[in-house]
Image (cartoon, rainbow, N blue to C red; front, side, top):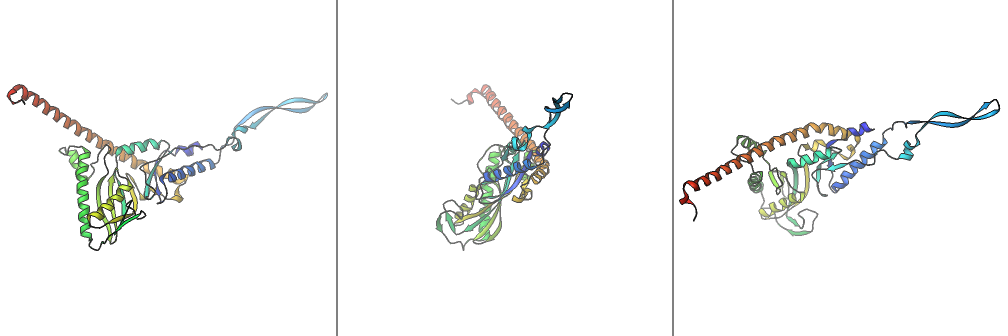
Length: 334
């Protein structure tokens, strides 16, 4: 049974349905794993040697003697010891709120440390977001309190595309600002061309790419690549798109389809939340997670090198200024 638990160290993804809190999903997985671990066949209880009194026929009749006997250790009996596994640490990655659904990454055992490494890698995530033109609510969702109704007949796909282009352009400028990397270096330039530049510290929500997947007024669907986001932020984006188009819009669905290296294909459905499936999912994800973290380390080296180069140039500039003050004192500020 210890060997069975030994395979439960790593990361895996499950599919979180809408309407369920993320804590409920995590607790359900944890409970299922503990139940299956404790249902496995136990090793037989160890034996202990005991000297038990017994009677034997002797010359003077029955005599009392001690007989060597092996008996099972009752303290190891399931009814006495209870379940072997009473605790299993299952940690949660980037959360999904109750209304959202999609890829939800969990860590078990030593995988909880990997969750921290993935968090510090600042990986991007991808969502499909559905919206509905013509309504405005207090929480930007279709289930919120209705505030306003508007017309939407004037909205065209071309107008929507223009708004999306503006959103992506403004976020790209912010991305370069918070990435704090020198684009004059060859490595940084190549990363920028591939769209791999990202901030290595906490920043406001950033959209790295946004496009329209479906436009059938009043319904529309977007694909959003982002980082440091919340699902409520994505609902607000839908609301602001409606305002920019001289109308209103509410969000009807937020679905995460990718979280770092994990996609919908990796996410286990409720019927797959079993010991065997989770252990297989952990094994299959190890290479992907390792590769993603290795790429992040390489990016961090470029990021650190860029900082060192800028600091060196700044130091040289300061030194030149100090030298100029000594050589041409008449240029100093009076």
